[in-house]
Length: 354
Image 1: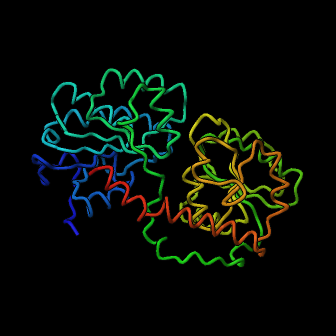
Image 2 (image 1 turned 90 degrees about the vertical axis):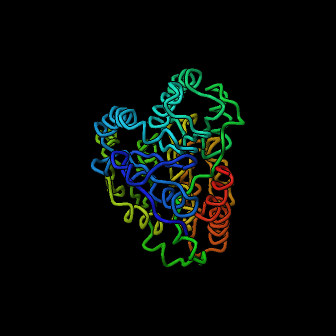
Image 3 (image 1 turned 60 degrees about the vertical axis):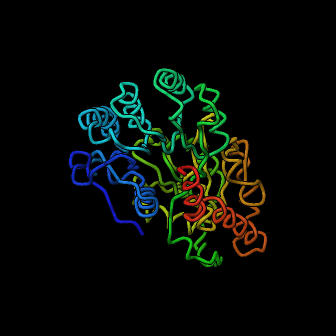
């Protein structure tokens, strides 16, 4: 085990970044904490958060403020990073700021990775294409979560596939690997269905389906999902906003199934909830998209649908006490272990970073 090393960028002189050092630059200590643990403890990186965790990342104002503040913080402290050999940057705005310093030859890393690059908006990819053409070099790489995203971003941004690395999405949950995948139908009582997440969701379509069903539906979303404020909820639909992650996980684990009504199929959404469901032995019903097909196999580990109108027929087949249900969740759990568990992604990330 390598020695723990981290420091805010303002105080990074306490942990000198000398030639050959590898660093993980992130917004604050709340961003990708599990990834940070692996990079620092197993791969010898130095953690360099730009700020303390002093704001709500789901606040629109906080997101805008961070986009404006992070380039300033990086530019003010560029000397701390000039000898870094490998930089892994968490989030796009940090990576872009570092690329500006590279173009100015103020820092010259041998390799620079933008970890977890994604775009929910196809229109935004036009801006990223312009930035890539202006700022990228052969030492700049992108780490994305699916093969579909790699192909899509390569084409949209004119970035060679050789500079895009695929790391399947994971929650980096070490504790999950201590589970044996044993399924207990008692965990699915009393019976209810779950839907959650805040980006690219069409909750109106899902709620309309449950108007005609007797089953209970629990939706865990965010204050950002203001469209729900205009919807008259039926008595069998319960809404919870901005709940703690422990409560979110418990709702997934206890649900008979998780239903994800993705709005825009060309966008990237739902990956984190799908992986969470695979881990917690909960079937997923989700709008079919090219990205989701890399996580689920229809009828074996989940259900891919064209519209929410197909949901009632699937729900009628789901019996948590049946052998078919057990086989469904067992296959999903194997996918989690093989592709999305801490062990699986840690090994793959080590190969990517060399």
